Length: 505
Image 1 (cartoon, helix red, strand yellow):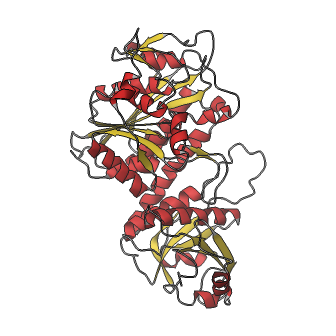
Image 2: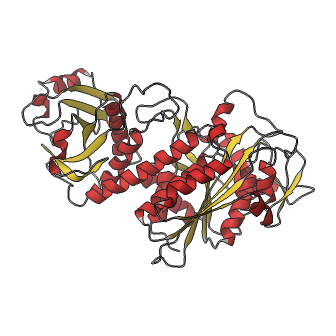
Image 3: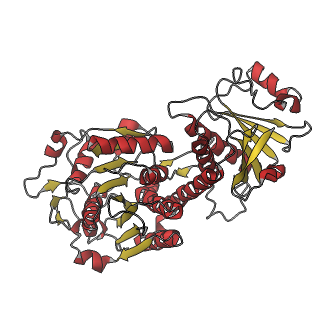
């Protein structure tokens, strides 16, 4: 029989807490015929042989995210239903597969209106890593954004979950790990809520207010600069993007500064916060423009990560900066051909007003340096070119030096969020040369994701820097077995992991 840890995802849990679970979720770690579930003796008998029949007949093959549900009637089993979830081995490792399987189970439990379920943490790997991943998966899988539904939701509330272990294996020391996972999962869901929120309800000023509220209880200090303060700093790039909108821009600064943290390093997380992107005068096609409410997903990820970092008490100085603006056409909007001046004095010839994210990030990266950052990471739904290159399977990573790229890739791998390295060749910088200003804001059709990254590099002052393009991973248009449609909260886990990893150099 599985043994319950003293932690749960969503409620306090003594070892007997699983007695209240009505659904037992079991990940199957490969081909269903090969994974005999020997670590759960008596399970097949408790289903009256249905489990063995399903595996042998091919009714359940154990494919990724595949599910099979049946009654559990044997004596001694606390749950009344059994859910198998396919979790075959993959290149991301066992924690990633368990995280995904836990999310699938949580979505099934919610759809069945199950108030509490148990998830069997069965896999090779370091128990605390597995437990944290399951905590993250349970919370993110239970997410459903029904804020704007006038009718009661069809599914039940997000279920509670007991994380249980076969024969007590791995129970010791995993309570805190599950709790960490729950904290990070909740921060991911915060980012999803922000990025899902309609733009008429989340202009820059409201985005800033929501962010301040979200991190306040974690001890993260905040400051919001209004249009007047932004102008005093000389942030002509941020102002230029926002000047066509009736909703003025904001600059959000969040500081996590533990008293026992060393003076350096100071990690700066910078997120694009365009609350709606019409493209401005270089207006976008109408089809799909509604998704541009989520063009602030990078900023939402930074807010979510800062909440998690503060709640976890990470012993490192971390700075979060989100420039916020709405990119609209209008009588005062920036025009193609205009020249804007950034806070650091860099001049930019705007050839396309739909290449606006890099403009506001340029001012924000400069400000991060002014605040004493030693290491920079920016996250943005920046280019359609990155979507063409990588699709929705991975986020694009541009970073230097190579050690910083390695740190980001390692953090992403452990967090279960793929990042794929892309080049920063000198040729991309040459495409941005302007005859009239220091830079152009676009470099032509070829290598669009790379030229966008090269533009940002001009504002980093040579500090270790990484740019993560999440244009293809920030949202999904249709629900999956493990996730609701809409914003994904991508990069909250990676940024939080990066803040906690040991990369002091």
